[in-house]
Structure formats: C-alpha cells, structure tokens
Image 1 (cartoon, one colour):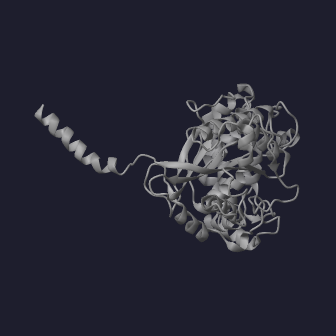
Image 2 (cartoon, rainbow, N blue to C red; image 1 turned 45 degrees about the vertical axis):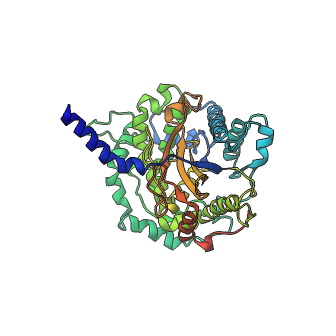
Length: 436
C-alpha cells in the first residue's frame, strides 16, 4: 500500500505541470469563416468518355449531366448546414432566430451551378426559415480564380519548374512511387484480381490510363500545370468516390470491387495531383494569396469593429461561408502549410462538402483575440447514409495547427496579431487585391 501511494504521488507530481498547462477554455466565439468544398456530384467526364477507360460501363447517377450536384449531395449539404446552426447557436454566435441571424451572415460561392447550389443547400440548412442571398459572379471571381480574373499573374515557366523541382526533374518517377495505387486502379478498370500475375493486356479498344506518360506542362488560368497521363487517371477514378458517397448500390461502386478503404487508397493519386497543382509553394502563393488576404482582413474587421477594405461582409458579420472547389481549399492549405487527417480519409483530403474553419475567438480573461482553425467534414459513411448530424453525433473534425503561429494548447490557438504577421509573410501582395 505504501509503495502504491508513493507511485500515485509521483504520478501526480509528474502530471502536474502538464495539467497546469491545459487551462480551461475561457474564449468566446466572435466570428467564424467556413471555407467549404462543393457537395457530392456527378463525374467530371461523361460516361461516353469514361467507358473508354474500362471494360464495364460506368453506372448512371440519379441525375444526369457533368459535375451536377446530386439530390443526396444537396441533402448532405443541408444536413451539414443544420449542424453548424446547432453548433453556432450553442456557442452563442447565432440566436436560432433565422430572420434575425440572416443579417449577420455572408455567403459567397464560385459562380458555377454546382457550387452555387451547394452554397444554397448549406444556407437552407443553416437558416431554414430565412431567405439568404448567396453572392456569386458569372465572370471569374477574383476571390476564387485570381489568375483568370486578372488579379494575379502566373508565370507558366516558373509554374512548370516549381512542380518539376519537387519531382527531381523526373515526373515519370511518380509511376514507380505510386505503382501500387496505379496497379489497383488498372485491376478495377479492367476487371481482374489485383494480385493476378501476369497482369492481362489492355482490352482491345480501351485506353490504359495507368501507363500514359506523366509530364509537367504549362496549364491554363484555372489549372496551373498539366500533368499528362496523371490527369487521365484522375478522370477515370474520380467517379469511385462520388459513387460511394452518393449511396449507389454496392455493385455500382467501382463495379463492386472496392470498399471504402480501397477507394481511399486509390484516392492518393487524386490527392497527389491536387498537391502538385495547388500546394506547390509558388502556385499556392499566386493562386491563394487573394482569398487569404480577404479572410485575414475579415477577422481584423470583426475584431476591431471598423470597416476594412478588402474584408468580406461588414464589421457586424458573424458568419462568413465561402463555397468553392477542392482546388481552392488545397491552395489555401498549401499557402499556410496546414495539414489534417481524419478517419477513413488520406491526409489533407478535401472531402465532398468538407470545410476549413477559422474561428475568431476572444479570451474572456485577457481580452486577447485568437484564431482557431479546424477541418470539418462528414465521413464517407455519413455521406453515403445521409446521416443526420447533431451535437451528439457530429461530423468528423480535426484541430489544425498553423505553423509559425499556433501555441501548444489542444486547439492550437493562434493570437490574431501573430496570425496577421504570419499571413503577411505568406501572402504575395502582387497576387491580392483589396476588392470585395
């Protein structure tokens, strides 16, 4: 008993400093910026094109068209919006009275039907009894597409060099580095066991996307570099995630050949492409400085109560919801070197409907303003089953550390003043404007 008591005392002594370093959260939420991706959609290529890559015809979704928000995608966005309604009401940022809360909410979306409809569905879930205006532009929105809008200038030669430099000047080396994922992809598309040896030849008349040469070339204003055959691979595997997330029958999810884990493994190829095109430091700086500048200025505006050029909404805006593509989220994460991982997903995946969330909080004891970042998304099974979300059954969430800014508490809070300094180092002033 004496030895046991000594051990308890020793344990308490050792744990004391740690416990003391974890103070109770005395912060109050003052503003939240939800930067989300569009919801579950149909594939980006028509089945007539996709069927050239496989021996079996790709399944049909419940809605026709290319890159169209599906009915389940719309439902899941409304569910996610309703979850944020509960959470923000609990935090005291919203009152639960939609007509009153609507005056303090700002929505903005990329001007494509898929993303506008996603934002509208989210808004309907967050403020179900209030009519909410979603701001969007039919032209290229400088917030989300600064290069095509003329706000930022992309040096094509530098873009190609920056990506090639990450690959040791040998882009084809990706074929060996991701050989397992490419082999799994091929076995699914051509319908043979993954471990079959030797692998069968490509069926007559079919394109084997897994052997097309990978190369880095100049891109377009909305796609900074071309990646050759890797882009074709992405087009072929993109439907698998959406088939699962949209709740298609098991037999129609990669023709019954992939579980959620298998889809996640193949998705490493998709994430690789986004990483190269939008997380590469030069590309992230050119393509994401403008949206980063607006986010930072919006927080400063809310903290000071003074209108600020280049901010979104007005000083009294409590909730800012930005809806765009996974490319936009990937770029912003790359600019600030943000990382996350959640169960069922690969690292840094921008899942359908998932969002980077930036909270402006104020310490009630010191008055200091803090920035708290997280990544929030429905799991693949929550999407597939159109699972209702509540405070007791929430979506998946991970706190996000902001390098060069976050402190060591469990939420990785970042003092607002440090966040502004960190952002000013990351943002390229020549790639950002002060326009709303």
